[in-house]
Amino acid sequence: METESQLQVSSISCQHKEGTSFFKTCFNGLNTLAGIGMLSMPYAISQGGWISFMLLIIFAMICWYTALLLGRCMNQQPLIKSYVDIAHVAFGYKGRAFIATFLYLELFLILVELLILEGDNLDKLFPNMSFKMIGFKIGSKSAFVLITALIVLPTTWLRSLGALAYISFGGIVTSCILIGCIVWVGEVDGVGFHERGKLVNLGGLSTSMSLFAFCYCAHALMPTICNSMKDRNQFSKVMLVCFAASTVIYGTIAVLGYMMFGDNLKSQITLNLPTNTMSTKIAIYTTVINPFTKYAIVITPIINAIEEKWHLCKKRPISILIRTTVVVSSVLVALFVPLFGYIMAFIGAFLSVAISLLFPCLCYLKMHKAARRFGLELIIIVAILVIGIFIGVQGTYISLVQIVNSIKP
Picture 1 (spheres, rainbow, N blue to C red):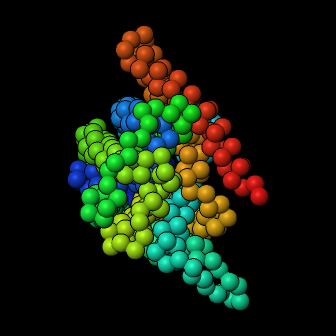
Picture 2 (cartoon, helix red, strand yellow):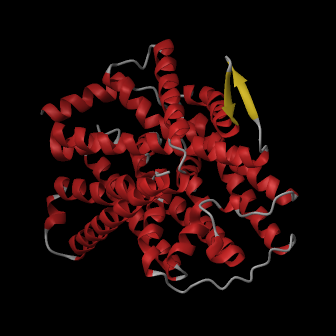
């Protein structure tokens, strides 16, 4: 078959992995899930009220299930190595191209978000700084974005996800430190946990769901992580560990932040923390470190796709040039579109919902005829599709309106 032969060429042309262990895979998976979205968890709860906390748990279960569907698709065809390979087997070349557009655009915008996050947090640590370069004055946020890109660039040159697992472990540690700092601010620094908040805010529920979608949008990376494993049969166990642990992290920071600042929360909780306290500085330092641990693993599927397309895996200088080019392009977008909260909501509503909810279900139904028979599995999948379409349409509209309004003078 044409599909199988093309997948065979792809798998042979760029085969350079030995396989990562169960625990290293868990580190990579958890690092991708417990990402920069955790900073906006309190804001997401404030938008939808306390009832949206239950939606967070429901959304985690839905995304865990769709991640398992991707794993089942990969198990059906051993030659599948990536998300776009699944799309190719399910829908052919046109389906592969269509889904690849969503996939790589989502990953690229996440790279942009990581750089914007660094610029915002470093600007709070070192306010009113400016730099001069070749006669041009560069503002502090823009300068910090450039500095971040230079620091993170060498990590993108690593090819092995086994090596990246050690960096991922550092990302998990920084997430735990951030939670500890927030507890310290509330308990010791005098902020307290006195805000009652709202039970429900219907007008903000769609924004909350879009942000939740962003938090669990690692599906674009899941097939790559699965393919890196020594034993792909353990993928379902990895997903259970990763989704359970990330939900605990998200839930903890969401409850703490909403009880501390209520409806006054900003898009990132670090922006609400009191200035000039040691705990706040440590919290911001950890958020500064966090994107460094995630950038390389997020960029991996994009680089793999480019290298496999033109068989560049063994040409190290060209590989480094490609990786550097992708980093530079993300820097340019970060400098000209620095709207952290609104862009994240847009990614969650428009792209992440499609990648995390819609496409896994559609690919699974296409590849498994038995799943199309009426039964509990089909009912669950159809319900996920309906939920995904609703969140995607409404959330995309709201986030685009917010972006347009914020750009207007």
